[in-house]
Each structure stands twice: as structure tokens, then as C-alpha cells.
Amino acid sequence: MSNDRWIVSGVMMFFLLYFLKASTQQEKRNVQYIQKRLPHLCELLELNQVLSILEARSNPLVKCLYGIIWPMPTLLYAYLLYLDIDSRKVGYIFVGVPATEIQLSLEGIVVLLVVYMNVSCLRIHLELRKLIADIDRDQQKAGRPVP
Image (cartoon, one colour):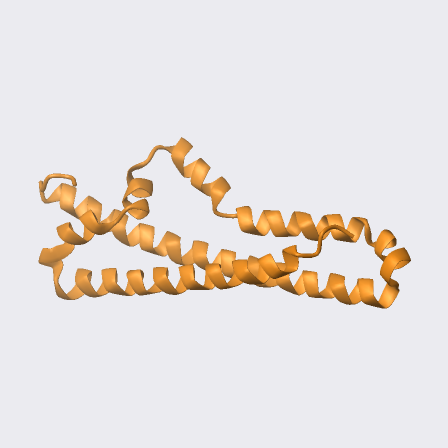
């Protein structure tokens, strides 16, 4: 079995991704509200965006880079789980079969939680990016300077 402290870091990653998801959801709601009720402020809204506007205007290479970065938490924790499953026979020797299987079950749950939050964050981010891209396109069509 590898170093098992990653279970704690996995739980922490889950909560960090949860906070990112909550923040991104609120930002999406704010964008939708301004877009529907205060369209004259869309230019200011666009100026407030950092990652979403860069992605909306970026070339395919940058979008590919974001496509690699976003799933990293999932890939990292899945790899750690794979290493522990691969070395479970050592755990059987040192701590016994029941303890090893319980630990692997906990690790599997942590990985599933991280995967769920990672996918949720990505989905909301893509929705927000589309909203910002639409606003950006409308601003450009209106002949307003691009921020």
C-alpha cells in the first residue's frame, strides 16, 4: 500500500472542488441575471471575466491545454487508487485482508467524490464560458471595443 495520507488530501480536494463549484454556479447566476435584466452592463460583466473570456477567444491549442488541466484531480486520484489496488497484496501481509479492503473501499469512495465534483465543476464552467462567449460575440457585433 502506498502512503495513505492521500485519502485526507482527497477529501480536502473534494471540498475545494465543492467551493469552486458553488462559486462558479453563483457567477453563472450573476451573468444570467445581468444578461437578462441589465443588458447595458454586459460590457462591464465581460471585463470582470478572466478565464472564461480567455477561453472563449483562445485558439484550439489553449483549449486543448485547458482540456488537459481540468481533469487532473480525477486522473491523479484515480492513479493513486490504481497504485494501491496494484499493491494490495503487500497490505494483506502488513495489516491484513479486512483492513486493506476497508481502506481500498474508502479510497474508492474518495475517488468517486473527486470525480463527481471535478465533472460538476467542468460542466458549470463550460456553461459559464458559453454565456460569456455569447456576450462577447454580441459585443463585437454591436461594434463595441473588445475588452
